[in-house]
Length: 390
Ligand code: KG4
Ligand code: ZN
Image 1: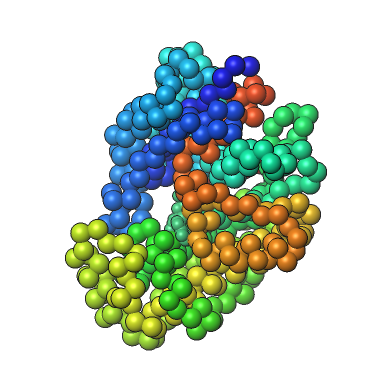
Image 2 (image 1 turned 60 degrees about the vertical axis):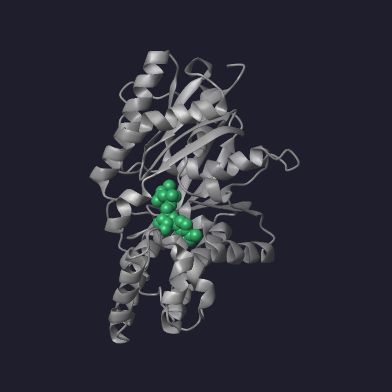
C-alpha cells in the first residue's frame, strides 16, 4: 500500500465533467466540476450526443485543474478511479477511455466505481473526516441509502465487511419509471421554469400552500407488482417508486385550470433575461402556480420519505443516508430529519457540493477497493445499466 494514498477520481456519467484528488477516502485535496448546464438548458434535459462531446472537450482541463488545485503531479497519484456506470454510454466512454489510457501510461492501477456507490460515499467521505464521530463501518447493522437524482431513485442497503475490507450492497427499492429528479426537471419545464428544475421548484415551493392540491401515488401498486418483468425485484421484499403519474397529473391540472397562457408568458419573460435564476421566477408566478409547485414538492418528498423509512424498518437499518442531486432539496432535508428524529434513527446528507455529481465521491468509493487490491479488468468498458450489489 502506498504511503500517500492519493486517488484521482474521474466522473463523466451524465452532464458534469469532474475530476478530484482524495487522500485515503477521507481528505478532499481538490474537487473540480465542469457543468454542462448551459449546453443542455435550451433543450430542458441532457442531450447525450452533446454531453459526450462536451466531456471530450473538458476532460483534460478538468483533470489538470484537479491536480493543480491539489498541488500534486501525475507521479504522486497512487491510482486512477473512474465511473463505470450507470449513466449515458457515450458520456461514460469518454471518462473510461481517458482513465484507462492514463493509468496505463502511468503504470498505476485503475479502479472501476459504480456511480450509485459514489453517491453513497459522498456521505461516508464527509463522516470519515469527522474524528469526533464513531466510524460507522465499525458498527453493526446496515445503512439504508436513498440515492435520489436526475437518473436514479434507488434504495440500497450498504454494509461494511470487516473481513474483506470493502462495502457490499443490496438493492431493496427503485423507480419503475422516472427518477424523482427527472420529475422535478419535467415539471419545471412544463411550468415554464429553468433547467435543471429541482433548484427552481425548491426556491418557489416555500411561497405556496403545499396542501392546496392533493396528488395520489396509489395507482402505482397495480403496475409494480407485475412479477417476472426483466430486472424485477421480489415484490414481497422490495419498495417501488413511480414518478411519471404525478408529471401527467400536473399537466392535466394546468390544462383543466387553463394555465397555458401564463406559463408561456413566464417562459418568454425568463428567456428574455441574460442569466435567469430561480429567484427571478417568484414574481412571475401567480398564487395558483405557487400552490401547485408547493403541492408537487410536498407529494414527492413525502412519497420518498414514507418509503425510505418503511424500508429502514423492514430491513432493520441502523441509520439512513440520502444522497444525489435531489438530496439538496431543503424540504426533503427538513422532513427526513424530523422523521429520523422521531424514530431515533441517525440520518446523514452530503454537503451541497457533494450532493450533485462530482468526482470526489468516486475517488472516495475507490479507496477501500484500492486497499483490498480490487482493480479494474483490462476489458473494462461503459456499463450504462450497471446495478449496485445483489
Ligand atoms: O446527482 P445529480 O447531479 O445527477 C444525476 O446523477 O442525475 O442530480 C441532478 C438532479 C436534477 O434532476 C436536479 O433537478 C435535481 O438533481 N436537483 C434538485 C435540487 N438540486 C438538484 N432537486 C430538488 N431540489 C433541489 N434543490
Ligand atoms: Zn448522480
